[in-house]
Amino acid sequence: MTADHEDPRLALNPHPLVRLLGKPASEFTRDDIVTAVEKLGIRMLNLRYVAGDGRLKKLNFVINSREHLLSVLTFGERVDGSSLFSFVSARSSDLYVIPRYRTAFVDPFASEPTLDLLCSFYDGAGAPLDSAPENVLRKAARSLEERTGARLEAMGELEYYVFADVDTIYPIVEQRGYHESHPFSKWGAIRHEAMMRLAEMGAQIKYGHAEVGNIIHEGREMVQGEIEFLPVGLEEAADQVVLAKWVLREVAYRHGLEVSFAPKIVVGHAGSGLHVHTRLVRDGRNAFVGRDGLSEDARKVIAGYLTCAASLTAFGNTVPTSYLRLVPHQEAPTSICWGDRNRSVLVRVPLGWGGVGERMRLDANPEEPADPATDEDVTRMDPQTVEIRSGDGSAQVHLYLAALAVAARHGLEDPGALTTAERLYVQIDAGDVADLEQLPASCAESGRALLAARAIYEEDDVFPPGLIDSVAAGLQGYADDGLSERLEGNLGELRALVERHLHVG
Image 1 (tube, rainbow, N blue to C red):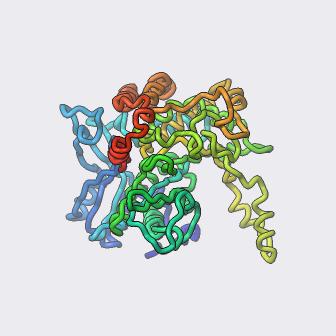
Image 2: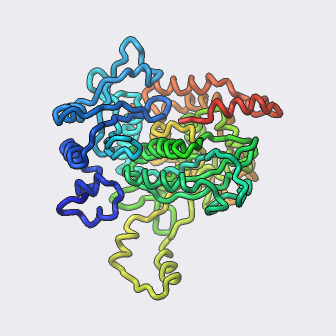
Image 3: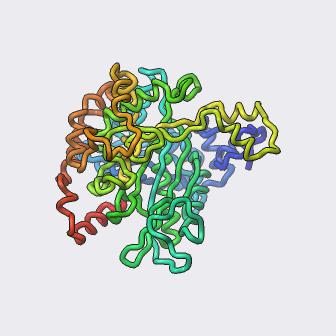
């Protein structure tokens, strides 16, 4: 299943459509999709799209003929927008969903040969739906690039728990699961299978591993895993996280297990975050890297994240249990600050390679000859990133990445950004630094922070005012100010709250 003149750069690509068509997914056309359907004997087509709840929806088609296939690929289909988004009125609710050809993949779970495509929403006039998550993200990415000449790339770190009966053979050790391997770590097979399916769907995966969180609670064991992606454009990065949630749930379900991305499951144990690494690309180079380390651009972007930190939680921490995770001494941030390799801060600059990679490689492999040509291919894009650690599995990931792009743009354009970055840099545990501003402690507070900062998000028509109002109203509707104090000692109410938000996003 290869093209006649396969590009050698694509030979190791696990995406079957890429190998079949002999081109990267970003170059797929409508005719390419038809060719793939015919050559692979595809019998069904699924259109998928992200609704207001952040979940992936699906519309099924049986392919009746070549003409029918072309019609669906050209015109998409109508859907009821009022059932998908709270801001769409039932009085005028018809929307179009139009497939994006670059997102096509063979459905790994379908009983019949099936091709899936992710879609964008359009209104009755044929214009991109202003408040649709994927369109807000596209506008944010475009605004940043047009105004700064740079492109923001992102990669998510998706943490999750697998729930199962307690395994008494090689029992897990609570809070000691980090990078553990089988048989001392359980259910790595779920992660391995999910990673392979995602890679075949086109996701750019960095790696997967067992995470810290091992929990034994009420006769069940909960084992934490994580899948990290590679830096890609913002739209692709958001799609990857949404697809990963779907795939992990499907794989676990087929094993008779349950997966949760909830920010907090048991108080006192590690929650699940959605850490996001970003880098700024200008002229084909990583603009976060300067001659002597972190560049001015990097510090300006960090300042933007910190300036907008409180309001960013409106998109990255969207349920009351989010704020049971954002507590001191749990490797989850509470203070608005940044630092190098410091896991207590909100924005972390992880350890980079700084030119030592080649030296370490040759030291570990003394018989290996240096190969300057290959080394140049590997090191062309410096891997240095900046990580923001507040988000969690409840994030509406398209809107969250859009908000990060807005914050990055704000920092790059703020004349006081470098001063802000210098003032908020810490070298010790953030909890030991007095007078640092704190992240919101509830959804209600997060909603108020968003309203206070709304001008930043509405600038350049990125976030529509109605969307800001809707997000803030939803957060404030939880009325969860002082929730932690009210729940203290009330295990029944706490359990009910966790169950209510167990399957977010």
